[in-house]
Length: 403
Length: 134
Image (cartoon, rainbow over all chains, first blue to last red; front, side):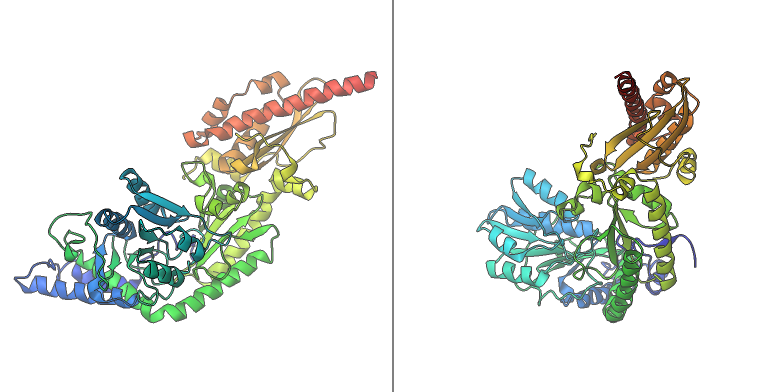
């Protein structure tokens, strides 16, 4: 077993060697511009791009003509949210999203507020899920867009997309989902779920960084204003020369996900269960953040009470994870996602996200369990809070000098 | 965040972790910070009859810098008089550990912990004297 162990698959994934192998010729001998119509270099590149488009479409039950290639999910979110809002502003100025969206969605919405749009940020339950009834009640005749993520990057919670989609379709409101974490990990079908716009990221599904896609429904046709102007590529929705090698890689990554999802999810879910139980059975005062069932197979987000997250990461430095602790961010604020779930600040500071994926092994999981348990025990011995709890002192009864 | 070697060294091998009897008249206990802020330091000093700190212990809930700051402080104050200990400033701690700006509050907390422990000791001594006088 090689150290350090990578357990941060929600941050990014390595490129699958099968994906890389397929990409390589498109850098060198097959370097043509897919927009070149006048020679075979362009023709073969265009053909490769179209095959990839089909592979991406198939993953989410879409038509290839509905796929727009972008640089990643952040760009896809920008095109979808800014594009819909600006095109439809005469019809309405109201957008609905949730408080636990990725910054790429939240910041687009904040920006639109400065352009005169009104945004409703819906809360989620303590399990991290949006109540569809809450959404239905928030829609007005001025609402033009609902944007709810497929699965959350920190806690892995999967939203009830089909229910949300049905509401949006009935009320004739565009429905966008940021599927950076969800596409390729959980089954998605744009028609069954009534999705109008879907953001996809390559590097979360073993394709390279710098490539992504946006699904834009054709029937009924979704119209949006472009954010990037130029040569009119991608039906005018995203100008810029298509990066053939990256697109071919994304296509192959999607094809692998389509083919192997069922088997892979079973394997990764078993590893996550092993890890969760291995930790829970050996430690007390440990809490799972987010819904226990409706979550990504590879996401385990746990709060280790009385052990601060950053010192925990230092203690398990052979395992690459991330934390919701304030000390890992520049802002000194603990995770806004955990706070939105009603996790108190103290516990938010102690959260660790373990992200398992395609190349995680049972041996790595067992090593991680042993390392985590030893680190928590060691740090609790150093923790004045743990000492007080052992002495039977109620920490809430103390008047702390907040600084 | 990449840590300075001195922080790592204190974090890996923290000095003087532990607790002393907080009811001992010679022991002063300081507790600063708040769980909601992500750091709580407990610093204890034992002062001998000559007014010298002959032992110090700490327990800290916090990031690596907070643990290192408290560990360093226990090392520094041992063998010092109370007044010498009080002359330690957060700047000295931050410089010694080469803390980045975002971690300066850890050194501030460590300085506060010394003050808080000394206050507790002095209060006890006063109270103890009154008690014995009564």
